Length: 197
Image (cartoon, rainbow, N blue to C red):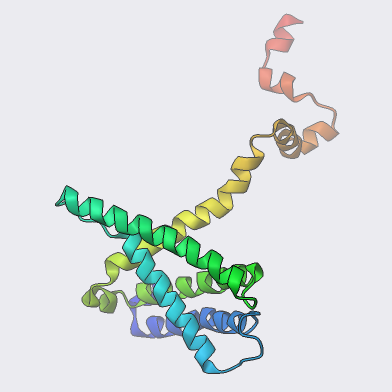
């Protein structure tokens, strides 16, 4: 509701700048940059981010009018995916400066930056719609939603495979009853125990 006014949009824009500062700090801590603190390094990180957005558009682009055109799009998407994986492996292997920790740090830098771009796009929705970028913003927002869901629920799904987690959960939920010496199975059974007695 606060972004319905011009004042709210400006305040939201100022608040979103903190994510860009976070990206700025992480970019200059990468081993790849060494001791270089020029603004060109930060600018190059934006070029990389723009490249990620273009790759995202390649993978989310689809036209349902022609099946032949869809086959071509799928082929381009497959070649792009294989090319990206090969390029990343070659870049890590033949460049001594780029390490695997740099890759994780880059993800850590670009995820909040994308969130800032989404926040700005939502705050200035009318302008983004007039530029014709609203569908792209919605697709990126869906990807963020799916990614956050995976991060939150993947550990829960993994732990649910182990039988001792159920016992631990029961112990945690009914901690007071266990400490008083009550048997949960009798409580859950209802009055059956009293009827049999």
